[in-house]
Length: 179
Image (cartoon, rainbow, N blue to C red; front, side, top):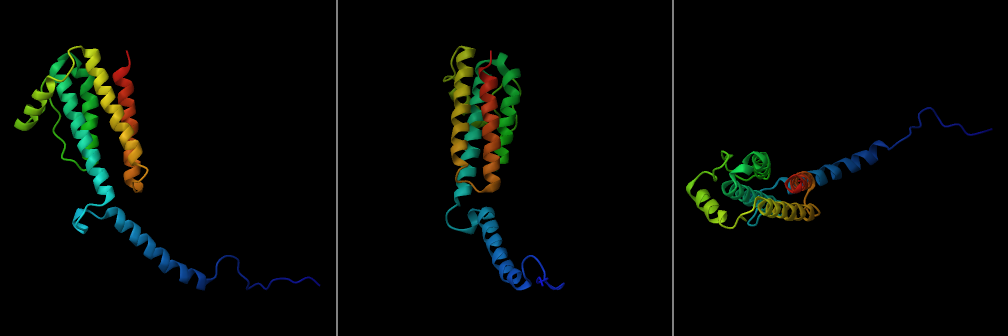
């Protein structure tokens, strides 16, 4: 006669095993969420994620200043570069930076220090539009590559943001180098 399991036999984990696992899982989840969300106030040094985020915001700010310099040197490019610059400013904001307000076409960024930096960097902009666009594309490519490398060590949400912004930077490179 074959053995038939009793109707009370259950499949799946037992209650005791679940009760033993749940507190450990909650403790791990709490630790990992706290590590990702902790800010510089939590300790004497900013976390690796905070440093990556700050670097990305600085890179976006510098890139926006480059766009300003090229637009100031080549006002005819303002219509083409304005939307890309606006996106770079949004990237800076996404990384927690205090982004500068969008500038009107043909002008440098607002504020005395921003105007001074844009004025001094205007001299570094190539005289030919094609060369200026090539330098801007090279800067976009360098920053996109840096962000791609940084996402290897970044926690979840920051890694997704870095990947998204790096992809946008690669799209900017394409738009800047197309004929």
